[in-house]
Every structure is written in C-alpha cells, then in structure tokens.
Length: 87
Image (tube, rainbow, N blue to C red; front, side, top):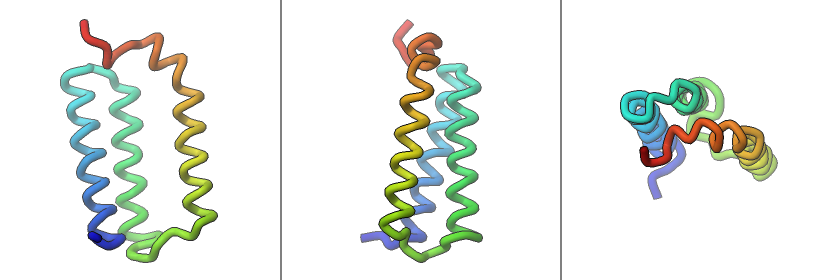
C-alpha cells in the first residue's frame, strides 16, 4: 500500500523510537544498539542500496533467515538479562 520507500522510512522511524524507548526505560544498551543499528541499515538501504526497488525472493528469504538466526542466538542473553521483564 505505502510503496517500498515510504514503508522503509516508517520502519526506520519505528526502530529508532524503539531504540530510544529501550535505552531510556529498560536501560539495555545492547538491545538499544541492535535496534539503532537496524535503523541505520534500513537508512542505508533506502538511501543507497535498494532505494525504492523491491527485494527479490532470495534476498527476502536470506533476510528473514538471518533475522531469525540472530533471534535464536541472542535468546540465552535476553533470558539472562531480562531487561524487558517487569521488575
């Protein structure tokens, strides 16, 4: 509906806001840094790399598999740190 470029800018805004919220209230520098780095990546994507071109199915598959891989690898740390759990 939005198109590639506006959707990417919306994602960048969400990631940046999330990074600030995590930094300010959860005091988790690692999670905030990951979210900020993701916002930077999508900024490079929208400005220099893919711009408004759609991703190919192979690129999408790789991205989702990599994102899930990062989630799986980081699970023990997230459980240990419990920075998002109610205190």
